Length: 169
Image 1 (tube, rainbow, N blue to C red):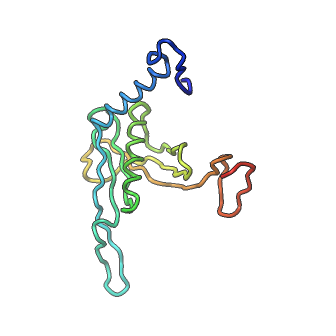
Image 2 (image 1 turned 90 degrees about the vertical axis):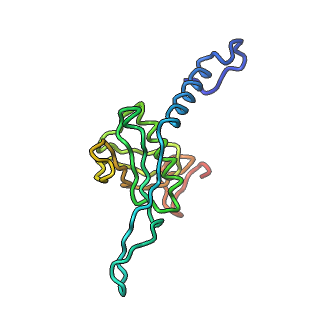
Image 3 (image 1 turned 135 degrees about the vertical axis):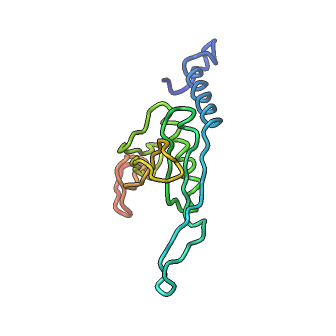
C-alpha cells in the first residue's frame, strides 16, 4: 500500500491507493450498517460499613457489547464489562474498531489485543463470556490485563517524571 495518492496520475481515482481507500471505506460502511454496539447499565453492589450491601445507581458501570458479528460475519460477539460511565463512549469506539478488525482476522480465546495508534496502551485478553444474555451464542469478553503509556517520539514505556528522550514527547 502506498502512503498517498499520486495526483499526477492521469487516471487519478483509479490508482492503487484510491482503490484501496474505496475498498476500506466500503468495508467499514457495510460493517457499520450491520453491527451495532450497545451500552447496557449493569447492576452494581457495594458494601457500606453502616448499611451493609447497597445497590449503586444503574449508571455506575456498563456492559458494552456488539450485536451482529455472529449473524453477519460468523465471528464471536465482543463485550467489555464493568465499564465506568465516563468511559462508555471510548469503549464503544474501541469495540467498533475490534469488531471491524475481527471481520477479517478472527479474535480467539486467550488472544491479547492492543491498539498501536493510541498513546495509552491497554492490553485486552479475550475470554469466553459467561453473560447469560448470549444464550449459547459465541461471545468473547475482552478483559484489560495491563495499561502502559508510551513516549510518542521513541515508543519507550514512560513513567511519570522519569522519561529521558532525545525527541519531544
